[in-house]
Image (cartoon, rainbow, N blue to C red):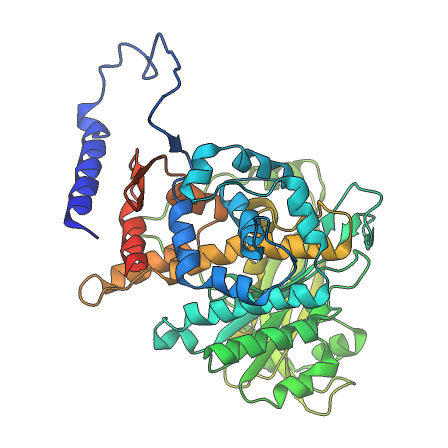
Length: 509
């Protein structure tokens, strides 16, 4: 970071701290919002955009080589008049960063002259042209685009420290994408009566990146095609340098016909939920009581000061007052035994959690209930409780899928057939991967600042998409072209700008 920029950021920080100092607050004689006689004018010379961080994202895309990789290997257009394949792909991703919610929002970017100048573009594809580009994809070309992104991803991983490659955590799940359309080829009706598609998503829990995405009709089961997609993700991870991998999924993904094959590779471990079939519940019932150990879950957070009095549980009180059926967790126990599924030739470790429940109505206890939850794994070293916690951590993928749906808005179906919607999802979800690459490219300066920089990298990796946009993309900027330089002149300050400029210094190297 340039010394002048560091001085300017420090000055802005001191200014806002003085303004927010509680010892120098207004006298309270009038409301804080006191602006009057407001007028609007159009600037003749000064031109600005609200999403100034898009320039840094484009610099990141160019530096990691994504633009050249797409244009060199993906050939869907016979003529470039004037758009290349990379222009179309990035058009979808950048629309997500500018908080575009649909194809029609591409027109807002296209009609914004300052936005065009900020990316050095004469023009951008309109929504109709962008939709036509999606329809040019078939399955091989979609797979090729994913492989191109994976090759670039491996280059980003290559700059990470050694401990980054200890173990890849691969999570898998399906997510329903509803649509109100009636003429979309490949759509179908799901188990819950919703019409649409049912994409399969495989993610890397270490960074949140999407390593696999397959669109399917809504009536297809969650696990369909999951093994093949997991194999592709494993190949990417091992090619990228990961020493081992752990596969995680809920009961739909136990896929017993593939367990022996994965177990034969010493680098692959797995923890899958398993259906509580009668035979397994019988095995759990027959376990001696000394085989069970109390399951103590760790606290969600550490109290930094003093414990606070918890608020009243209003929902619990209403349930008791109105004498609704209420199921309370009394205690949890964990045990394990060896088990060989029908489709397997190898004995595996079956970890079982026994939840002791109390079924109540009002203040009366109706009866005690016991429910079992099973996890099959080829991990033999950790304690049974650790296996349970490891499996439960997969639930974070539900939050990630929520980000892909509501933040990036990539899991949608705006087009007229299964393949084009699949291509649309892959290109929009690329914005989520770019967010992860942004964090991974942050430099970790050796010395006294290294630990702080690592904390900042972990923080950016864990950001929700909307928060990332507010911190690093929605930066009001004046666009100035001087000589051969395209200058983004920031017009406001936020406390995350030191991280922003630290990445910029890396991108300029």
